[in-house]
Length: 212
Image (cartoon, rainbow, N blue to C red; front, side, top):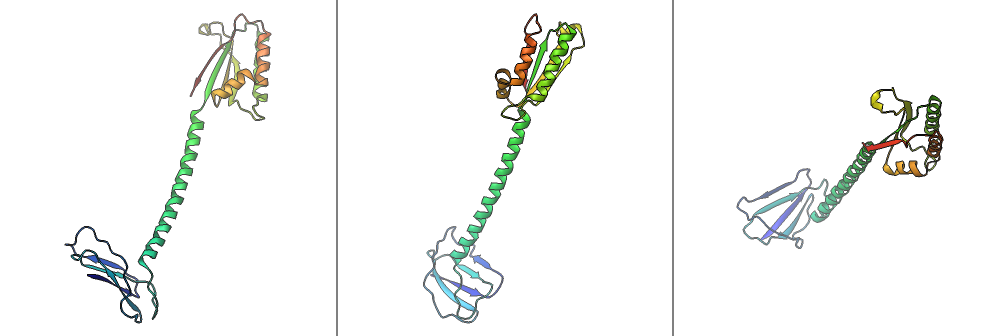
């Protein structure tokens, strides 16, 4: 059995198979049969399954007299290449968007809040410590750029629940590594520690921190 394909100058395509045909069939392009006529070309394809009836028409936009019909395989390969290229672009866009959202989410979730409390009974010493924290907020840097997200200090209200703590400072960091730098290498914080050490504190400051 052989399958004949008719090429016609039209804009519509159709594929019809017998409902009683088996599920699978394979075919390959065979030798050209018959002459080429104006506006129409006939080609013959062998079909391995003799029980299946196939009728396939492929209509190019323009087929001139004596012209050669385009290869079905070439057309399919061209369409597949276009689809693959489009899919790759869409995947790249999705990955870019996903990466941007992930970076924003990580930036929002990474925050270390630190509270430091001092027992400084003398008002003059309290002012010296507050001034040191104010200078810290203005001068803090890491690698030439500000790195402390927030820095402020204030006096407590004298509530008995404060347990004698009179000065409280709050600092915020983007990571625990930044807080480690703050404790061990930051020149601006070194001045704060030097100032606090000169106040004759009865006990070291209380430090607590947590991640948000």
